[in-house]
Image (cartoon, rainbow, N blue to C red; front, side):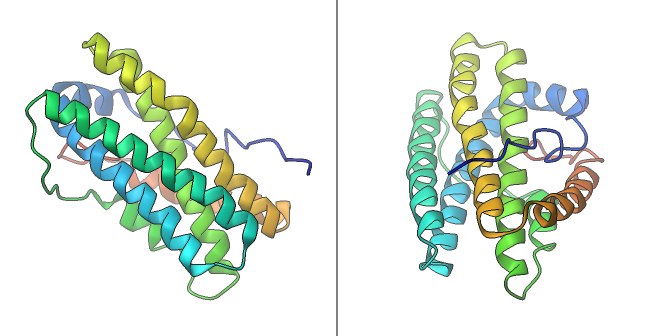
Length: 199
């Protein structure tokens, strides 16, 4: 099957601000704990879509791989937390993910399209921000760890794009993605006061 190229620009309309980088680097322990939550939630998103659309064989096959990889990352992040003496615990969520999920339309097939694109947008932003952490983190071991995750994060948002264009016309996917990208940028236009991966 011919795969359409990834829309690297459309997923993210605006780059992350330098203020986020400064905030994240100043609170690496909190960022790492939030990263653990993000990996767990990303696995949950993939699993939930598999349960909601069990007859979509290509979706199930692709998201099985993503869920497995997200859980592997969850374990790796938790190993870093353990080495730093940071206990797993709850963190309040920034409005980012909830704001994007609020854009998912309730009726099918719009719900499937929006669910795939919202997941892809979150993965694309995660890829960008892990890259920023890899470039700016003053701790070489942690910087190397973040760098090691970037390829898989890119593969994940690419998978969600491919699935969207598998089940929907590409023009329809692109138009909706552009709408969601505006919302995604607006949600990050003001820095959240608490340091998070998606603050």
